[in-house]
Length: 120
Ligand SMILES: NC(=O)c1ccc[n+]([C@@H]2O[C@H](COP(=O)([O-])OP(=O)(O)OC[C@H]3O[C@@H](n4cnc5c(N)ncnc54)[C@H](OP(=O)(O)O)[C@@H]3O)[C@@H](O)[C@H]2O)c1
Image 1 (spheres, rainbow, N blue to C red):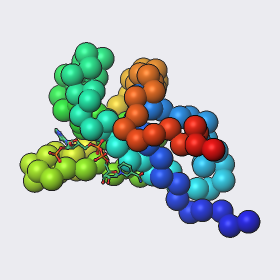
Image 2: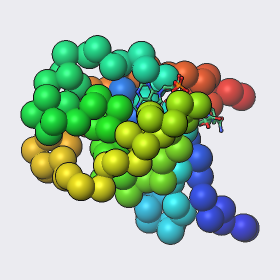
Image 3: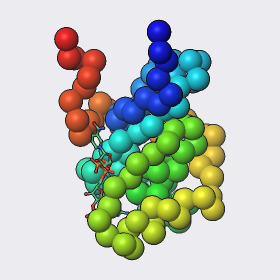
């Protein structure tokens, strides 16, 4: 059996799949996430806005930082130069463990792509 080096899945606090991340971690497979910004659908979520205010960051930066702190390679997409720079600017702060656990509870199965678990 060939074990993949990387597994790309949809991942955000709203589509948080700890069992998949745990499985990949145990098998030494690097997790990689697409649609980490939920395509902007959650930018006004009051729970996320409150954290952005707390850390003096944008809601987009909070989402990227959450993925990185879960050890996930993340692929935020923007065609806008200023936003790309903003999205890179996430290495100068840390979300506390308490707030990471809080964000893990944001799950509501919001997905940009189809749920692959339903494909037979
Ligand atoms: N393998 C797969 O099955 C799969 C599936 C889906 C996506 N992907 C890939 O994963 C990457 C990301 O996915 P995605 O594009 O669907 O979703 P995403 O990264 O969650 O969201 C991208 C959206 O957020 C906006 N945005 C990005 N940074 C922003 C910022 N700082 N402030 C405000 N708005 C911001 C972008 O608008 P602007 O561009 O206008 O800034 C774009 O509309 C893409 O490269 C995509 O090709 C792969």
